[in-house]
Image 1 (tube, rainbow, N blue to C red):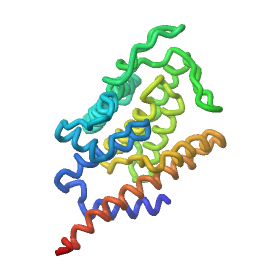
Image 2 (image 1 turned 90 degrees about the vertical axis):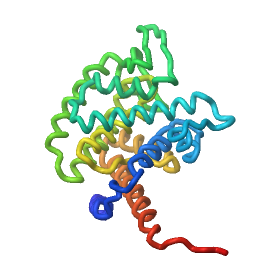
Image 3 (image 1 turned 180 degrees about the horizontal axis):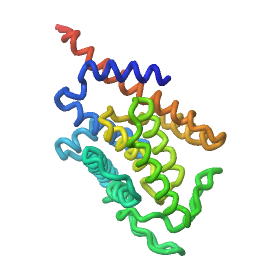
Image 4 (image 1 turned 90 degrees about the horizontal axis):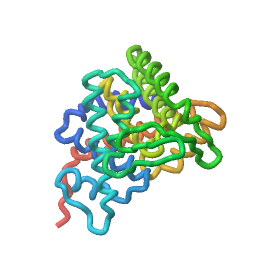
Length: 262
């Protein structure tokens, strides 16, 4: 799996796809589309593109879905700008990231244990579960977020090979979503943290494809069930290979020219 990723990255870099006009812009739009779609957003890739490039909304689609897309796009830009500036990972950074994800779509929650403002990235003052999974007790969230940031920051300096960089980014994704520091926006924020680490090292960004959502959730659950990170790492490695091969194929297809049908 990792050898195949290495091969795809080498081919991608040789083609210099990241230097193609508008490639980065399209990449950001595609990442935003797939990430928000995983969370239930119904805007198509075409509708997402029109919204983000021309401000055109889609008739019949809720305002909240348009806001979710725009919020994610801004949060991704925030990630990439901070990655380029080599900012230090801290719980404050994580809160800023989640606040942007929830900027125009979430709420202030009055819980029995205190007020939680999603739009400020407040950590959850309460316990949560999903199916058979119980997540970290709320009173441990702050300390675990601090520990995660410290460990990621230490490794982000020493990761040099493609495998080390991508494995670190995949692990960051898994651990943040497993701590589940917020009531909402956790999936989007975790995928963006993955992108932050990749961008920090100047690598092509990963995405999780909407059509593979079921396999994505299964990989998370299976990883937790047997405590084997390689399950999740291999899934995300496969997703990145799929993305790279897809883009390489589209780029090479242009050399075939146009088939005139009249």
